[in-house]
Image (cartoon, rainbow, N blue to C red):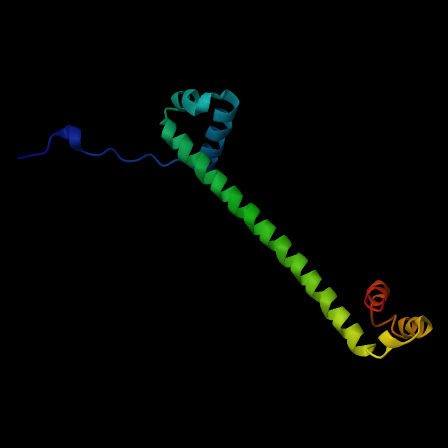
Length: 124
C-alpha cells in the first residue's frame, strides 16, 4: 500500500530575518492585527504573531540587560562611597570628638586623599 499524495508534507519555507522585519513593519503600517499584511504576503496570521512575540521578547531581554547594567553601576558607585566613608572614619576616628576647628584641619590635611564633600558628610 502506498500513501496518498495529499498526506506528504510540504517543505517549510524559511524566511530571512530581514523579511520578517519588513513583514512586521508592514503589519504595523496596515494595522488590523496583521491579518491584511499576512494575506498580502501570503503568510499565516499566526506567523506574524509569533515573529512579533519573539521580537518583543528579544527587546525586553536587552532592556533587562541594560537595567541590570545600570543597577550594577549604581551599586558599584554606592559601594565605593561606603568604602570611602569607612576609610574616612578609620583615619579620623579621634577627630569626631574634637572641636570643629580640628575637623577643618583634618579635612585640609586629607583633601588629596578623600572627597571633601564625603569628609564633611561623615565628620558632621
